[in-house]
Length: 558
Image (cartoon, rainbow, N blue to C red; front, side):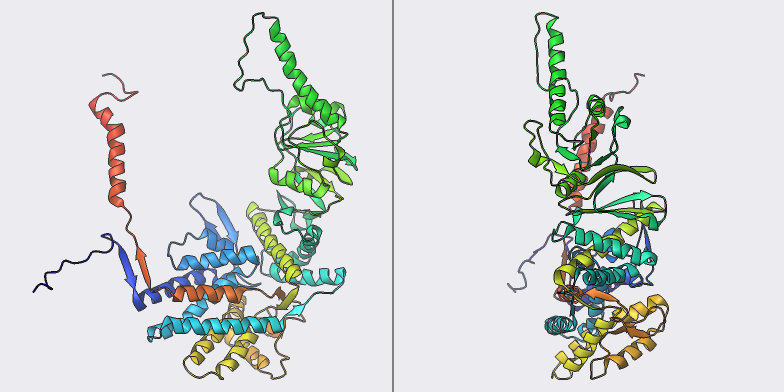
């Protein structure tokens, strides 16, 4: 009787939503596959684009997996994992974001029937991890090194990698043109890891082929005062002074109080202010610099002063551009004009101001340090240029990674088919349930060539059968064969220069799938609605209460 009278234990706050067990896991898998279905059609050279219209009214057209995943406002906690792996793939590798999301979702889709049949998730996770390690070892074995090649050969190989990336983008029609530009930009910054050393400037108008690469720094003409047009717009081997101070006539009003006993003394204070600014300008001129750039404003007085002495100046230069000029020209940004020595001045072969479309650009080329480059993008609509910028970012990341890791593998679904064949073969040598799980992992890898065919409008079953037959050759000659997007058949991806760096997509996708499989309970805390309600009531009393009792401010007397 006493046991029946025991009070009920309340562990969680009232209204807390908990869901657990098999149903919860299946729900998470369904959410992840639903997310993958959104980006599924964007994969490959014939992938479609997505038009995303957000709450602010801005429109984005993209087929970059990471961009789409960021813009989708996903609220499901498990599905957010896919967004995170797409972001990490984007920051780490640059390309392959759609691939990662598709693979992770397909691993989960293959795991779903096993979960429904009562298999413990940990058994699946263990087998998936084993399969992942085997797959990565196989990729390393199939990779081709580009080390030890001459610069020209290396450029050619890297250009092929960039073209593979740009194939699936909006600017795929001009892939050779842009691939060369990207490779030259990445080689220009050398071993410097800072990607912001490659600037991308967008100028609407013209066509894509009007885009050009500046071996140095280019930025838009900044706001300028009268007198600017009298300044020279081209210099050969100029000295460049970089500042982080204002060159403006300012009345000293910051916490300064001056008491005058004689009105005539007022003029001496005004003169002192003028002397301060003239002294600063004199020191800039004495330094021998012919180009003066500042992150802060350069006023009308200073602009005219420099114009009279044949010096070019630009104020309010963006921090990023100033840092790139400093890196390229070998200058140092100064916070004072006192004691400006030659060592802190930068230099370049040619400085000129040039018209690009409707904009005027300040261009520094032939820089001694060289560690920077600028791509000026032209094109029709703003959305088009935005997407072109995202595409070039992916290509830059891929080329940079290929340079660092110096290994490439065959693309076009070839590497996925080869790993799939290898894992199926390996699974036959294992006894127990693990054989089934590794087999399902191998089957999931086929989603990449299958989706490439679907997106191009080919018969996926037919093409996959041809690929399986080709990859089954014991000699291994079929290993580089992938989907031929142009004919709807199969082709040697390596011979067709469809290359990609040995990417970590499989590793990232497996980790994400294992993470989702390891979750068996979701606890959702209730929002403190009552607390919010009380706050609203208090606010109402504070403002509206006074109005009810008496007249509010601004109310007319009756």
